[in-house]
Structures are given as structure tokens and as C-alpha cells.
Image (cartoon, rainbow, N blue to C red; front, side):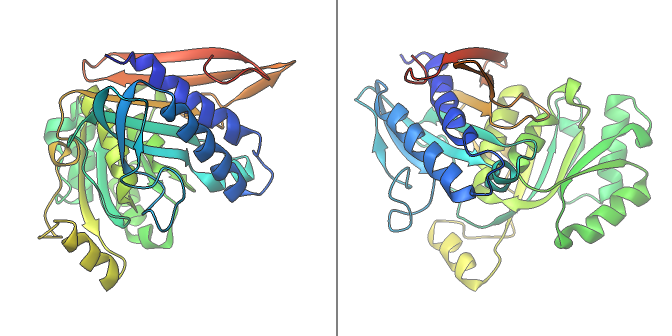
Length: 314
């Protein structure tokens, strides 16, 4: 059986590659470097891996494309990856960019279309009391009650987008605090399950593939994640239906997104964020900070020092 720490080496390698491009305004270069390094690292593992969420379809992405088989052979797993979650964040040197991956047995992760998804994420204490179809105020009050906090102590993280203007208004009217983020909602959703982050709810619309990645970690941590596909156009809607999403209005519960009970989630910080420190260079070494979560509910924060010039993960 593969050691779960071996998967951390994969996200570490991607983060190290992308971090060289931090603040240089070249998002594609950062993403390309991370993709190449992540693919090479996965290719060296003793697994029979299949990409179910990656860089796109084969005709769109030369590496880590959906359906690509990776590894030297071994246990059969499905893999969801985002070598750089928050390419704009890396390009501009902004917080909360991560290299991220989820692994499950075959068929354990939803193959989500490249579309938008309405999302709601909370931690374990509030998990039974919220619903994506409930009014915003009701969900915030439920979280406050579950956490035994006044509403004005509840912090809601939302992507800073024009489409969220009404959502932001409703959260403010409810009396909660808001943390607006420019990109990267995987990190934000997971942060709701870690008390030390001070983030209690994640709401709004973002990428559907990122929703599956976040749900994998949140399921391990006992939180709650709900989603609903919101295609941006008719083409996306038709593609979702062709992939088996007969009713686009149905609520996707966490067990719909992550069917397996044997899940591994790991991520490595590229830039400093709510969950992890970013890559830091000193002398001829670099330090990485990662999170590893298993279905058992154990959370490990891993700090590694890498000698530059050596192959990452060695």
C-alpha cells in the first residue's frame, strides 16, 4: 500500500516549481512548471493512477489531462489535482495559492464538469445545521449557534466577484463579518474546518472541480460541503448532462462528490495562506509547509526542508 506521505512529496514538488514564478506576473509559466513536476512525481509512484480532475480534456492539456493514466503500477486509484490552485495569486505574489491533490479508490471522486458550482462549506460543529437552500441569514445564525458565538464573530469567506454582490449584502445584513478573497476557494473552504483559521463559513459560486477537491478534505475532517452546478452557458449545461448530471438543479451532497470512505487529501502552500505557509528560500535550501488529511480524520501539518539542486521529495 502506498504511504500517504508519498503524495505530500508530489504536492511539495509542484509547489517548489511554481514558487520560482511568484510575483513575476506569468501565471501560465507558474502553472506549467507545477504541472510538469507533479506529473513526473506521480509517474514515479507505485500506483495505477487515473486523473479524474486535472488540467482539462486531452485535446486541451498535454499533461495531467482527464483520463490520463500515471504511475508504475500498483494499487488502483482515482486522482484529482490542481497543481496551482490560484494561478493569479502566484503571479501577483498574493496569499492562499496551493498545490493540491485528492486520492481515492476507483470511482470514489466525482468527475465534475468544468463549470461553476454554488458552494456552502462549514466545519464539524455546524455541519448538521446548514443547507445550501436555506436563507443566508438562517445559515449564519445556525453556524453562530453551533459555535456558541455571537453572529458578529462569525466570519464568512466569499470570492470577490460582481456576481456575489447580493450575497455579500445579505451576509452584512445578517451581521456577520466577511473575508473577501480574489482567487483560490479550495483553501478557503477547507479553512472552515480548522478552528485556528478564524473562518467559519464559505459561500458563493466557484469552479466545480475545485469543489470536489475541497469536499475531499472536508469529508475527512467531519465538516459539511454542499454544491449545485451552475453552468455559465448552454454548452456547459449540455456537457454536464452528457456526463450524467441529469438534473442540474439537484443538490450535490458531500457523499455525492466524494463517494469513497478511504480518501487522502494533501496540499502544499505556494504563497502564505490561512492554512499553510508558502515556500521560503534560504541559502541553498527551501522550506515547504503542507497539510495531509486522511479519512481517519487525522490532520498532519508537515514542514520539510529541501536542498536545492536535489530532486524534490528525495
